[in-house]
Length: 127
Image 1 (tube, rainbow, N blue to C red):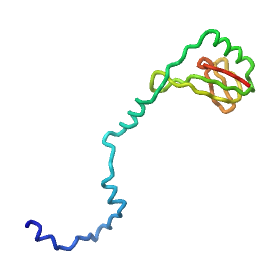
Image 2 (tube, rainbow, N blue to C red):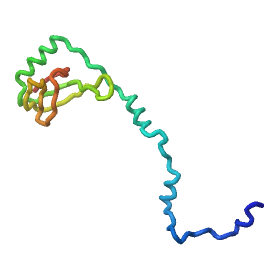
Image 3 (cartoon, rainbow, N blue to C red):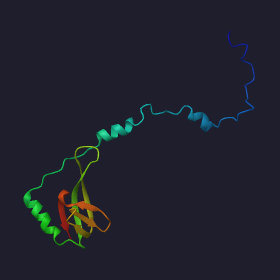
């Protein structure tokens, strides 16, 4: 047989290196991601976005009339946020108290520092 000359030899123990722990030995056989970033890419592609809804002129007038007297009032607003990476975006439903309206930048600013673009408002209600 081929291994008869070494089968009964004692196991080698190194004097220069300490023995690996079980954790270190098991790490040698841990799986690795051969395609780095692939799972992130799959998640990004499967993420759903929706297109911005076009609102009627009557709805725009209704929103503009509500904007006239909402400072320091509690509001609930639904507005569109454009996606950074894909065409489309998502609608956010936000509740808060209005701090000010910036007509130059066309934004509603809430006390929690949320900025809501007036042109992206889909629904506006106050209490």
